[in-house]
Image (cartoon, rainbow, N blue to C red; front, side, top):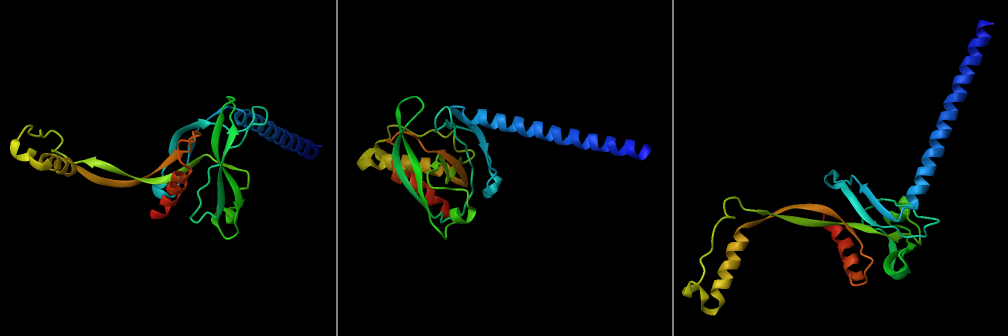
Length: 203
């Protein structure tokens, strides 16, 4: 009788554990669906391999209908990606038209095909790109330039000397990577998006 009671108690404990796991999964699924319908995305992305950088509080408007929503994936892939990209106009949730960058094809042999998560029809919302910061030389920021010196005003010599002084006050800092959200305004050239993506080959 003791062994039988112990087995029943263990069975009940296992059933309760499985039930709690199911409740947790259902709640997580419900939270994910609610988040997928949120019109605005605010997330942290990373860390990436380069300097273990994490991009904090990145915000952009979500594509897709309010009913179906959409999912956001952050992928770090090596160049060449092996994807075809196309600029197109879509209707935003606000009712206005906006520019998007759509994946039109995934080419065998590229890192995207090897990863397997990118599919034709996905939208590219943000890209990483390297950017060099600039450091102020210590002790030089408070120097005052002389103004109105006739000897430096001849033939634009004054402007050149002032530019040289400013250049001496600035040192090239380290290269960092930034996350650039692709604007929905068509005034931001599509070629610039492609150029910024290619800059990742430099680091």
